[in-house]
Image (cartoon, rainbow, N blue to C red):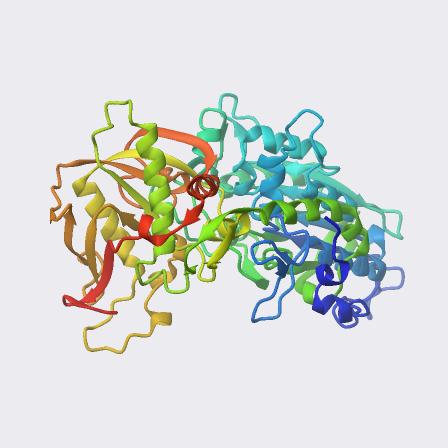
Length: 599
C-alpha cells in the first residue's frame, strides 16, 4: 500500500520544517562565567529525554485513519522527536549531548501490536521492531524499562532488547531466584571536554514495581521488582564510587507519591520525588509512567540540601525534555554547578524524512491491516456518554467476554455457574459507525492489550466490587444541576478504573456517599444472594489487582488465556458477520439520586 506522503506528514509538518530552536535551546556548550579566574575550567552539556512513547513513530491516528489532532494542537511521533534531536545536537555539538528514554515503548498502537502478534519479531527470521529501528536511527544512548514492555511476554521483550543498539536499563528488575539484575542496571557515558578531562555521566534505569501485579502471568517466579527508592539508594552510591561525575536516573515512575494498587505491594508506584528527596547523589531524574507534563520540578534532598531537577515530557513523543548541565573543575574533579530543565514541543517541527522513509513500509502494512472489514454494523455505536450511561458499545465487550468464558468452562465443574463480566469505558471518543466495521474500529474501542481471566466470586464480593467502582462518581445532591463533565473521575480516578458489570441489575445512587451507593442489586429479578457463586470474566489488569478493586486479585482463578480481548471482539464480530445491538445490548445499571433516575 503506497504511503500518501503529503497526508501522512500532517498539516503542521508542511509549515513546521523551517521552525528552528531559536530561543528554545541554550547557548553553545562550553562557556566561561564572568568573574571567574582566568583559565577556570567549565563545561556544559545537555541530556535529552523522552518517555511513554507507546509505539508512536508518526503523527498518525491508526484508529481514525488520519493525521493525529487534538484540541491543544499537539503532534506525536518519534519522527518529530528526531527533528528536534538533530537541531539540539547541531546547536550544542553532537559530543555534548545524550539522549535517553524512561520506558513504555513497545505497546500502545496497532503498529506495536502488529509486530508483537500479527507478524511477531520473535518469529524465525522475524522483522526488526519498528521502535527499535527508529530509536537506533535517532541514536538513543539508553532507555529504561517500562511496565508495558512486559505486556507481550519476556520473549518479545528480550528480542526487542537484542535489536537495540543501546542498553535497556532496569536496576530493580531482578532474577526471582538469585535476585541479581536481570537487565543492565546502568550505563556510564564519557563526554570529552575541551579541557582534556572527560565527564563521566552515569544513567541509572529504574522501572515500576507494579509489573509484578499487572503482568503477573509473565513474570511470577521469573522476575521480581523491588522498590524504586530502595534500589536507587543501593545503586547511586555505587555509581559515585565508580567515579561518576554526574548521576541521572531514568525512572518509569511518576512524581506524585501515589499508588494505584492499594496495599498489594509495600512500594510506591509514583516514587520519583521520593527518590530525589531521600537518596543523595542524584543530579536529575527523567520521570515517566504518569503521562503528565512536568517542565521542571525541584526537590530538595534531605541529606545534602541540594536541589534535584525532575522533568517529565508529555507522552507519545509530544515533548522532548532537555536537562542543561553546567560543570566546574574543582579540586581535581568535575562538580555540577547547575542543572535546569525545559520541554520542547514536537508540534513545532516537521517529521524527519529519514525516519519517514525508514518505516513507511511498516506503517503502510499496518494501515492496510487495521482497515480490514470484519462485519457490518446496523447502527452507530459510540462511547461519548458511556461513562455515565449504560452504553451498548460497552455491553459488546461484556457479551464477548461472557461468551468466551462460558465456552471455555463448559466442560468443567463450573459450567453451571452464572457468568458475570466487567468492562470499562476506556475512551470517550471511540465510535463504530453504521455500515462496514473494520479492525481499527474495534481496536479503537479496546485500546489496551489486555487478556481475559475467569475468577470465582461470591455475591457479597461482587457487591463490594460494585461499591468500589461507584466511587468513580462525584457525590451529587438530588436537587443539584447535573454537569456531566463534573460528575465523574472523583478523586482523579481515571475512566479505565470504572467498571460496568453485566449479568446483574443495579442502581448507583450518586446522592449517597461513597460506599453506600449500590441499590436494588438483583440477579434474574431477585435480590442478590451474598452467598451465591459467580464466574467473573475480567481483564488481566483487573484480575491481577490493577485499580485495587476488592477481592478480585485474591479470588480463585478458574481459567485464563493469552489472546487479547480486542482479538476476541474481532473474532466475535467476524463470526456473526454483523454488529446488531439486539444481540448484545442490555440495560444493567443506571445512575439515580434518592431513587430517581439522573437521566
